[in-house]
Amino acid sequence: MISFDSSSATVKFLTTEPPLTRSCAILPIYMIDKDNDNPYYDDTIMKYMSRPQLPEIDQLTYPQYYERYSITPSSPDTTPHQIYHDSLNNYVVKRSKEIIIRHRFLRIEDGELFFYQQLLLNVPVRSEADYKITPDETYREKFLSLYPVTLTP
Image (cartoon, rainbow, N blue to C red; front, side, top):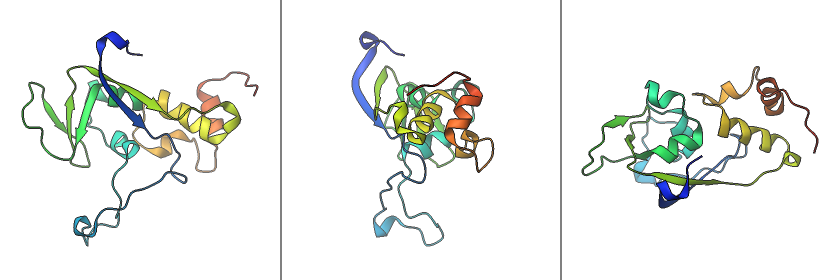
């Protein structure tokens, strides 16, 4: 967790919706490549999963990644920091000051949405599939396998 005195005034909202309920924004027609099957903008979760494969970045959680790094589709004008590329060809640059991250507030009563969010906020992965042991498993089961506690609503 970052302290307010060491962070910038910038606040970024991160989506925490599971893949099947996540909203997508459609690219303008001139940006859609005829060879690409994906006509949507990449969201923050997709960009997180595609982050550069470096030891210093690999173990960052979803919020930590956005607190510490700026991700843009175009090259930064000037920066004293090293510029990395993710697997979506975005430019990734370490921030001078960490930013504040916000996300939707969920409670345990929200069920699978809550457990997906907890996995996303606390477990560094590179694929959505890593949030489940098997395709038929629930996010709750995966969460409880990592954090075995007694849950009461």
